[in-house]
Image 1: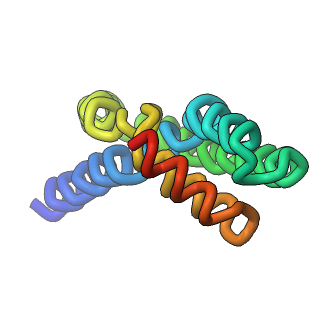
Image 2 (image 1 turned 180 degrees about the horizontal axis):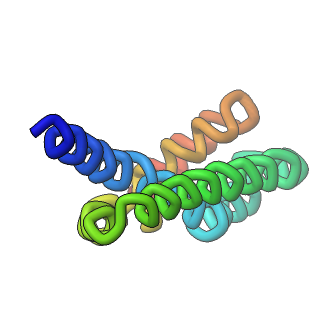
Length: 137
């Protein structure tokens, strides 16, 4: 009985780690190289932020995202191997569902603007960004 309860709790934690941890971080990393990069380039063209600031900060964010994503995927893969065959099922289903739920991270939307504001806090012209938001969103 005690072993079954421990296995159940472990599987629940694996589901939660996959759905709420691994998938959003992985999609955020993908977004750093795609959507956020394009949005940052657009902000440079609009004069909201200087190109040098984007070149200084964005690669650091991208490297950090890759490192964290790789670590989380390694942990997930290791746990799945250790708890096979149910580990693959407990991680695979929430992984796919998480991709559908969090796909807006890699789409160009107002969430991209918030992430831009967080990534470049204090480095951009807030008035020009507000004007851009008002005309495009």
